[in-house]
Length: 185
Image 1 (tube, rainbow, N blue to C red):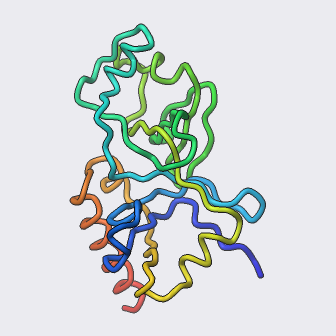
Image 2 (image 1 turned 180 degrees about the vertical axis):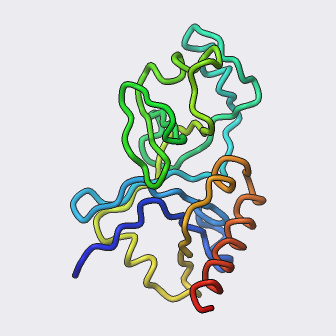
């Protein structure tokens, strides 16, 4: 069976997702998906208690935007730092992450952005990621709704970069519903 890539899609936890799951009410952006390495994404709507400025200060440099918070990208590789951003910017280790988006992960990216003059138009910073083994995500997508499943829809930059928390989840559910209706009419 041909592997269907989910790169550039939002995974939205179904409202019937078990409330005790760490993924209840989450929205995940998928930036890597293949039949050999599996699927990798970042939770878009879980905010840490750490600002990007505080994190940069711990590394010995200041950061221009004191309002940006580090996001909790998922339970895997919790010490890895990732930057999901628009494709108008690159760092030392930057890869394509879907239509008009890129993912960067290196020690220089925040230092490069620190003074605010060299940065992407839109970005979110994450620690950790969400990972599925090859075939695992598809089996989760195929299971019955009452067992908790994922909804998928095309990603929207406004949802990814402008919203957070439950607002992001509700807006993603609305986008999923609208895309499903548009598919039939």
